[in-house]
Image (spheres, helix red, strand yellow):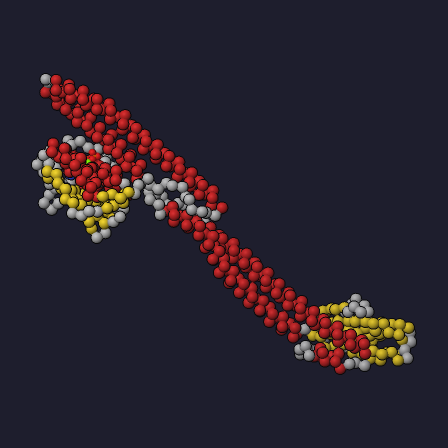
Length: 458
Ligand SMILES: Nc1ncnc2c1ncn2[C@@H]1O[C@H](COP(=O)(O)OP(=O)(O)OP(=O)(O)O)[C@@H](O)[C@H]1O
Ligand SMILES: [Mg+2]
């Protein structure tokens, strides 16, 4: 059998797709965690900056049109409490600088009650600035007082770097967990395929029943085609068996007529040459008839093996019946036929097939052993089942050919001139193996053939 061509692996493809998805998700998780952390950090810093700027703005008082800002201690201390950041502030009355760092830029867009924020560089450091404003009355009318408070970002950057490492750890952990899950998922997805393979390969060579075990919906087309294929194969096998049986039937009847006619003519003929030719013809007809009969039997055996019945078989009784049926033939050939039933044994199986097998072995013994020989059939119980031994005192199997004799249509050298088709031992072997047993062929130490059939217990 040629090995199938392999292209790719479903499991590997599934695993790679799942891992690629997991890697993308892990990267997304990393960036999401990082951006959320940055946002949260910035929001909390913005809140503190606004609170600080607002408290400075609220401390501003207008005295006689002059603006007086009494910088509250809490305004800058709340910034210090965050971390070791540096803080700056500036107070402007519209464009006029009042206090703080004159160069500190304001965050554009601040309105009364709505702060504005800006990230920029101040004195060589990255800072975040919050600007708030409110209107105050001065001797020049109502004007806008604007307070900007800035804080450096170095501490926040360290915190964000720490967050970034944590996010990377979470991403990596997520990916590792996904790898494990992907392996489990890939395995469980492939499992029904393995189950189907196992259930089909566990079957015997003649088991062509449709697959009945439930399968996932994706595998239904495959299993349906498999079932259709097996159904077609089963039908074609049955058709060819029926054909053989029919053909054998049709061949045997005219052959019997030819044989009878040839015998009549042979008896009436005076010419010895014609007598010899007719003898050869009768032998050939017997051979053909036997072959047709054995083919018919083989077709019947194959059919019954496919639908093996399981009845209790009393081995002693069955052996006795087969031997008694062969007795006339043994008497005709003056062969002493004996049965030794040592134990009463019961087997499970098809009695018709067992009879057929035993009959073929007895037929061989009576056919190949010369007149005056003896044949013995012994039934024994063994520790693991039963054994039937058919021994004769004939010439025995041709030892060199022994291994190939159970093959189809193979006959030994000693079968020359003896009617036969080479199917007897094939039938016996198939029947015994279908019953879970085995056939052993060999010769007795003192000469003669010996066939032993071993059967497991019922
Ligand atoms: N008891 C026996 N003694 C000697 N040779 C045997 C014996 N039984 C079988 N053989 C050898 O084994 C061969 C195969 O036996 P098998 O029964 O399969 O075929 P067959 O007897 O030739 O034909 P048939 O199909 O008619 O039985 C025989 O041709 C014969 O050479
Ligand atoms: Mg035979």
